[in-house]
Length: 319
Image 1 (tube, rainbow, N blue to C red):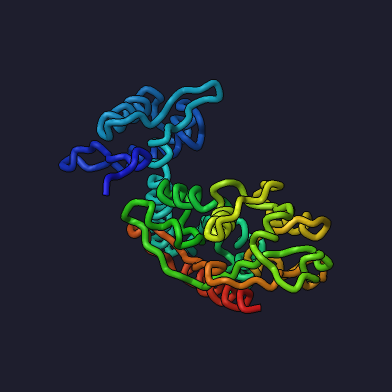
Image 2: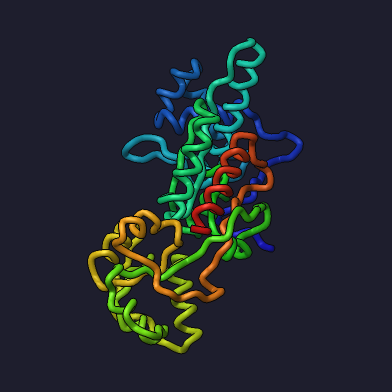
């Protein structure tokens, strides 16, 4: 499979290798946003630092840094190299601490998750996990499926929690493991007139207003596929939104319908403001998986977190 443009090939002389010192210099420049500030922190002259970066760019065959009104900023390739430089620096700091007999600093885990998972499954799992790993800093970022996978390829995340459906569209080098089976439901206001109808059809549902994720979102795509299979036009009255909380509130206060994971609506269902329509089809199920880079295997802390995500996901999807 050909590699896309956003995954560059480094034009580096294999005999020379990549100088780790230059990578650490690059990381400092990006973080300081200035050659002068970075030079002071590194205790070297600015001309020497500038020359070192020029050589690194020549070795890689690409531009890594650009000047802007706010200072020095990384290019897209610079961001990619910087993500690896940070890991090298962290490992060097950890090795130094261990050699000195000190306690290793708390590491940070950065994960990307779907918005629907960020509302229930992940917070519950994190609460359990933090009781076991109080010193590990966790950063959780919610994005749509495509942005999660692109971010993973750019090394922005240690791993992502997403659907398996779109996985094959991306290049080799990623691995996945299914964690739990998610169940999607069509939710409506608890006293919606649809609950009083003896039979429900997709044609009937399409006549009501809907609140959906943005075009290209997983739930939106699922709804469009279901309607297309019944040769039914898409709903004419649609509100687009990426917020699960907004969608649940709109459902509970209007005639709008929405396709949401069962676990994401548990709070409103328990309050009695919304509930799922009695519609079940095999297509309203999806696999949620952890996806990570093959060259960056999961750490012990990450595997522990995923164990809790799997347990919570299975518990809430069966409610």
